[in-house]
Image 1: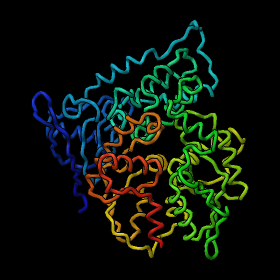
Image 2: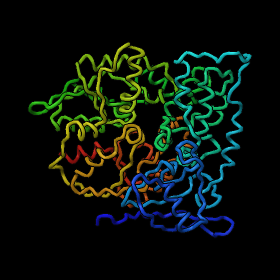
Image 3: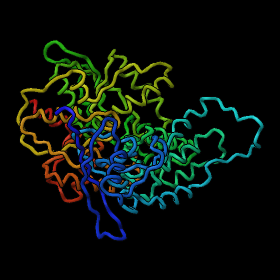
Length: 518
């Protein structure tokens, strides 16, 4: 009815450690108005229902960061979290921090760690009468990380902090170190501190960036840049990271071969579909699909052909360099960029498709910068992840697929989910297979612990992170896990096998699609 007030339901975490045996949730109905934020709702609850509700806020102008809470499982400043009519909200205190009362958490441990990081700015130059003049290009990186408002949302969602905060300071504190490292006037070297505080513990899952109210790309701007500086100073990478570097220098691929490489089995490099092609693309296989997961590369090629695509598969393509970029080993990138551009340009392709999450992210986000740096021109290709290409570019609805009765759950790889915004496309393809029942796990996009060089450099930490993913998979009761990243496939398969659940299968989406197309 016109004029009828809309009501929004809030379930709020309540707990006083001095009085309560355990936490509880209380429900409130709050009248909605346009532009309402979660902080407005909390103030309304406090003023109209329960004045004992404890929560923090200071400025209410989006800058202080003090009001951050968990909203439906994700951290964000309450003053920025928009309220939508018709939705229900669960409000909880920031995770990974002890609760003082209700939504108020204890930051003392965090601030003690913060203060122990050492000096942030040191200069031996005498103060002049005029402000210091610094060329713009020298403080570009500093400006990008200087916007942190210390809301600590990133600390509450970091999968590494959750299982090993003692080993890594956390995203927010690394941002503080990056501010010091990138300040062109600072003479203090913070790299030894960053290294000791877990510089190589980050999986680059991008969860911190997702919740950051200032949209700071922490993995790229902080961890990867600091790692590159550490490598140049001889502090990095970790011992386990030298293996892929040496393999790339020797074979062009970042992993050791297992069985006959896919590219070596090909009798030609140009594959034509039956009938007139509807498009022409280059297939970038990636190292793992070429050397370890050959059936995935074969399935990808056959899927594209069945969809009417002419496919070019250069045999001289090499690693995209993703493992090197993530660990700061950039010395090999010039060779990889030059070789890959040459390999695909000789066929005149304008579009590259890959089924690898790490490859598609690197080719999209990192290659344009490297191509400009090393070749002095713009990136000559448009890059798509396979599911993105089928759903968004071809706009195809897969029909006539063979039935496959199976209860499955989907794992969102960090590099295609948060890295590229690809969530709905693989689900659309998966559920187009008759008989597939998709059961979503509680957090399908939670990192499995394989990325950022953590699996190769810090295996014990990687195993701790993946344990939570195993728990979520088991809770679904699914017969199989499906994903679209080779590292995630191997990581989750190992995790389930070692936990005693070999009966739960792990599939690459392309394998299922190809089987359903027969």
